[in-house]
Image: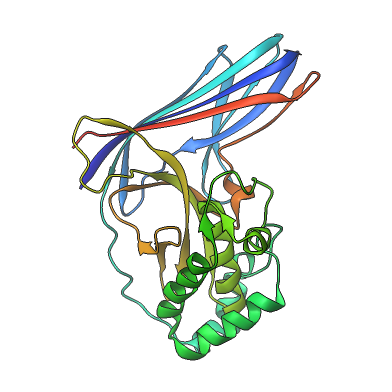
Length: 279
């Protein structure tokens, strides 16, 4: 078991004073079978009115608004979370099971294409080839491996609005893109699959008490009789180094920050994530 502290800071600088802003932060991990959230707080400078709710996908959302003119806004989420390596899924289904109306109806929302995971004839052809040679659970790993082999990890080449297909055409991307491309393959095969947003501690042999530059991270969950996690970026099942925040159909369902403001000009955005292994 690991215990980690994560401090995620997002700073906005407006070119002219914003007279009002309305925001949603999806920065709060939730306890589940492999992680226990000991504490979380989301704070803003300037101070704002806020409230929390659980969205349709089960992600904790902190909503807040600010009605005084401001040229800067800083949002800081601090969490302490205990994590374990997940148990491997005990149940396994066949391709025939996945093609049953019961499964298709139950998981309809995470089988359909989305803006970030569009339908593609090329991807469908690759998916058929993978499905022909693998059982569903093995096909998940093969799909993630294919996505990783087709693109180089290179920050700055794609944006939050990029689809898995955009990244594939460029041959470059980040964790979000590897996740989206893997989801396209899995959904083409009829495997229910979700996008997971969270954090990743980059040091497997992390020194307790040492703070490192961590990062927001994205991976996938696949349903092959039960939900389980896989990280296409590192081509591995997840470990204690991972903290999940939320899941949905694609990035748009779990974007860390979302909001609108009243004012002129674009904003400068600065994001930092610090992770400390505590135990």
